Length: 365
Ligand SMILES: Cc1ncc(COP(=O)(O)O)c(C=O)c1O
Image 1 (cartoon, rainbow, N blue to C red):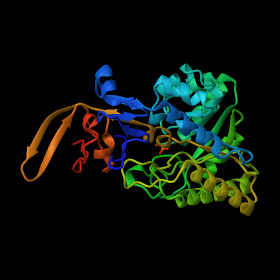
Image 2 (tube, rainbow, N blue to C red; image 1 turned 90 degrees about the vertical axis):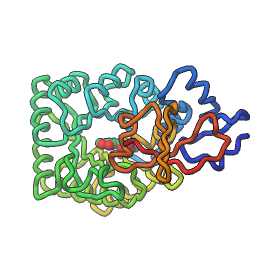
Image 3 (cartoon, protein in one colour; image 1 turned 45 degrees about the vertical axis):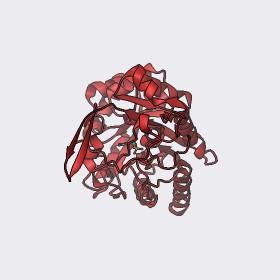
Image 4 (tube, helix red, strand yellow; image 1 turned 45 degrees about the horizontal axis):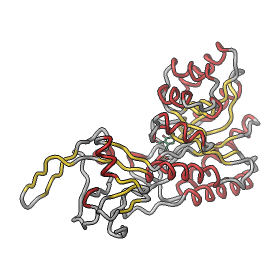
């Protein structure tokens, strides 16, 4: 039987074989559990490559270009860094560990951008010594530090400034990152962000490539990006008026929502990119700004739908009239989203995949 009409959405490319066993991309998941043990993450490599290729292709007709930097935090074993590199995407890292992995995978330092709100002096030194394509500077402390370290190294370090655009993306409040009280970026309050731009522009060892923002994750409504673009255009216009500086790059972060359950109806990569190009092109004409290269930092929209986690069921506890708990050999560390912000997942029993199931809710308490 190959019908999967009743299978809840766990990952793309699922099917059920004639023995009633669930398969991902044609691989028998029972055999994988037997061979590798559980818990185990399984990814469909072809699907991962396709997602990278979609981002690589989606903005092809826009000049000066759209480039995607895979957000390493979504999933970065060495093999993933190699795959992303082979598919032509850059990598957005958030820590010295991710930087190490990306470099180890052979990613050109110029194709690595370094994000984060509390990079240590040691991490920044390593990034500068490696010759990273860009450090995305989050705050004044870091701006001064990167300037000093670049000076000591005798180089000019390319940077972007992360701006907090004060935009509340339509997503769970715990994964909004662009609202005014967010801990990320220079806030657009008074002259704070403008002052950061002035410092960056006038520093002899810093090369300001442009501005960055990331408004949140699991975003389904593209008008959140329209609001972010508008705010960034207004900011860039004011910086241009004050200093004459114009951007080369506009980095709009990640955030495209994905399917975790049947109810989720995300936009496609192509819709996201086409809309962003339209917002930026129209806005630049209106504000009389040069078209920037558009950078994106997709994370979950590259990996999230391409894989699943296999667990083994252990104890089953029925609390009469209330609930049945089915315990597996995994928990909060691998599924923190459930407890953190009420995220929902779907589950399927691999060796009973041809039998219909009662509703299962996923809980990691
Ligand atoms: C700065 C930055 N860029 C990109 C991402 C990736 O976001 P997503 O996985 O929603 O695409 C994140 C996620 O938190 C982020 O903080």
